[in-house]
Length: 400
Image (cartoon, rainbow, N blue to C red; front, side):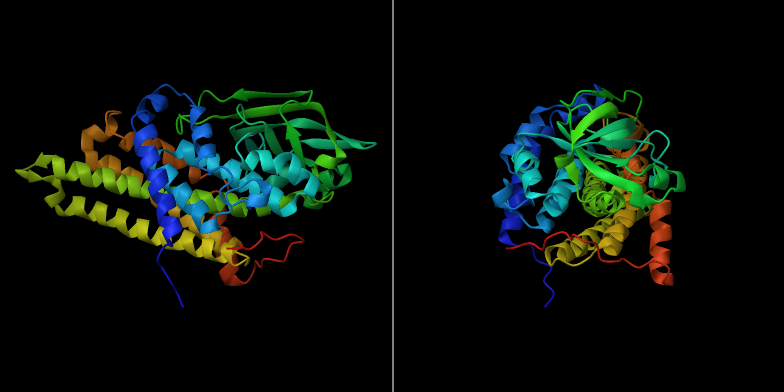
């Protein structure tokens, strides 16, 4: 039977994040955004609530919640501000769930447990200055010498780059395959900030997600023990794509929260502002924009929840997660634009949140697969040009 009702645990989780956000985030987020300031105290709060290890089993330091819970947390956090959801995407989605699935028991003990507990913060390092959608274009290399790898390269547009303790990094380990752009020559590694030769910097010139930390990091002959190789040599591309399934899921749920934030802000303003003798919510074209936001919100929520259902069941969901990410991020951009429009001239002022929504929404239409990449992927699925093949490791079904 289909059941669209949330469990009592889900509703309590939503309520707890919502109440925390109203108390701790909403009064401060305008100033944090304007000051381009990342508030590290939110990491501690999120750790204390069990959010940073949301869907990691309890034996590995997590809260043991299901994957729908991860989506709910992502939606509620982005309702407050995109910068908070980004933490869930890179730490909980891209990094922790990858270590849970592909990591050795030793790696889970050394890295996953403290990350799930929030004692260490983690992120994901794939994008480079000259390689975004074209993963095969990365230039970072890892040369093996004895039981060590020496990693050299630069990663760019990395969320929490200047904050994280641990990094899931992708590099070429086969020089010949690098020349041929054969992705089976890419491997994945866990790299610590404390490793010699590692340095990071904050990106100062971005114009969205200003309350979040985004930056770059460089590796100059960083010595990485072989025990920090994730998966087998040459499995890096598969691991990167697996990780994106989890990251895109949190992005989709987060964008759904942004649509809801745009809807709620537009409704409030449409009931307050008057024009031509009546509140502007009485005008049909304003109603049209708000109706579109509601339609997009409900559709986006169903799409990400469907992907979460498949994750809970241990079923492959690359196609469904990609569709959710594509639809919800494009819809959030539309909602944010209309939110500015509903607010009129005030939408162009930082006195209201519409401008922040508009600046924040654009990133998600680009990162973790541009809308164009996702369009091609969905067309290829329908045309039969693309099929998802089984991988050696699959995200474990929720045991609940």
